[in-house]
Each structure stands twice: as C-alpha cells, then as structure tokens.
Length: 142
Image (cartoon, rainbow, N blue to C red; front, side):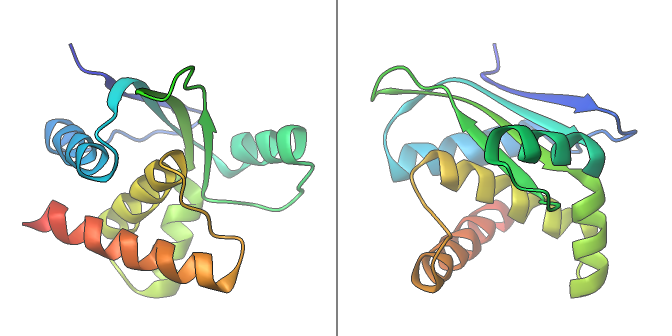
C-alpha cells in the first residue's frame, strides 16, 4: 500500500509517473534521515486555494508555490500534507524557461526537504536548500 498519495483540489491536473515519484521520494527520505513514511499527501491545488492557507496559517497574503505541514508524532515516522500550487509551477516554469515537469519535481522535493528540516528563510539556508534540491533532482533523472 503506498504511503505517498496524490490529491487534487480546485485544479484539473494529474501527476505523471506516480510510481517513479514515490520511489524517488522514499529514497531521498531514507538517504537523508532513515525515517519511515507513515503518510505523505501531496495536494495539488490552485493559487487561490493555497493563498487561503497562507493567510490562515501564516498571516501571509502573498502567493506561494508550496506549503508543508508536518504532522509527525514521533521522531521515526514522517506524516505530512504538502500543498502545491499548479498555477505557481506553470508561471515559474515559464519565467525560468524550464519545462513544467522539472519545476514540478523541484517544488515537490522542496516540500519534502522542508519536512526533513531544511529551511530557506536566510540566504545561507536558501543556498543549502537549492544545492539539496539539485542533488535530489539528479537522483530522479538517474
């Protein structure tokens, strides 16, 4: 039974290559922490849907591409909801002139890295996060 699930709110979208994505995410979590996945839900949604979460939980009125909620109740098992705005991914991929799927994978792993304790509030943290994202993306492609 998969412990990584994909849901959709307020968007017409379906994640491609679910099995490969699950295996990739499980490998990253195993390599980084050795923790077990109890349940990780990726919820793909609209800008409006995610903006409401940002306002309610973080008092932030700006658009974002990903929000990770960590529900883990012990140190050995991971449980999380990771919300991702498909609209932000589309716009970011166009702005960066990269394929949509590449940006999707980057944002998905960014959410997972937050769950694993990586932060991105300072320039130093952001640099470490980007390096780790790139390392993880290389694993997906290999």
